[in-house]
Amino acid sequence: MNYFKILAFTFIAFAIASCDLEREVEIDLPDYEGRLFLECYLEPGQPMNLLLTRTSPYFEAFPTNTIDYLNGILEEDATVSISYNGQVYALENNLTFNPSIQKIFNYTSDEIVPFDFENDFDLLITTKDGKTITGKTKITKPMTIDSVVTQFAQNDTLARLLIYMTDDPTRDNYFRRVLHEGSLDSIPIWSFPIDDRASEGTIIFGSFFDYSEGDTIINTIYSIEEDYFEFLQSIDFASQSNGNPFAQPSPIVSNIGGTANAIGIFTGFTYDRRYTIIER
Image 1 (tube, rainbow, N blue to C red):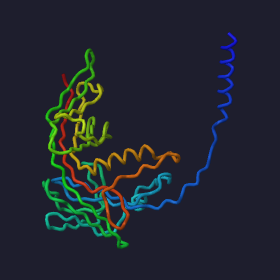
Image 2: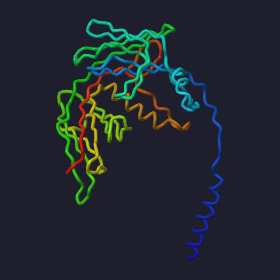
Image 3: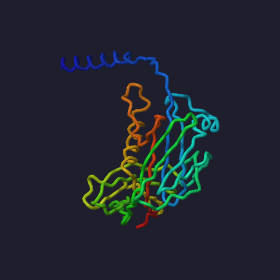
Image 4: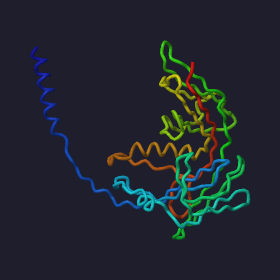
């Protein structure tokens, strides 16, 4: 009995002492120097558009005025061109919004991206201070969804979806799986990159038993390049480490070159999308 009394007393004393272990500390963060950040996604059948911005400190107060915020991060007055199959296409410095993908761009063109899965696309940007940004990519050949199966849980009203695709064993394949409920302008329930390393001929994407009869589920499988796959992974890792000044910084994996020391992604993709209304 004395043993248990001693153990209980020790635990209570330790718990009381632990209340004073929390301390506030001030950390002097180094001055942050912004870098140019580029996003350019070539989608067959869509115009050539590009977003060029300048990064800002993570702990900086977020502006309440949208116009002031955009003016602070958008990098203007650059000369931008995309070369393909011997032709050079200039992108004009115009701000535009694409509602289908919920993105803004500040360099645009009326030129439509071709359905070409063999030839390279080359990017060249000269900034207003004379520095360069370069990139090279291809558009990934599309892989299509074979079928979408609705499966109800046993003795329950909730269902899940199973998406089946046939893998191409002659090449390494990279995907981005995105799942929306209701409409494409909603926040994705899932969005993640994945490769086919564990595939044995058939690729299966699933979901939880979360959906009721009448729900509309939108599955999109993007076929992407390896560099975009690595870029997306690095974005996920960086977002997990941000916000903690004691955590090891996680760098963004970029496929951008040139003298401007920019980071970002210049890539092409295709996708297959299926709408499913849950029903028995």
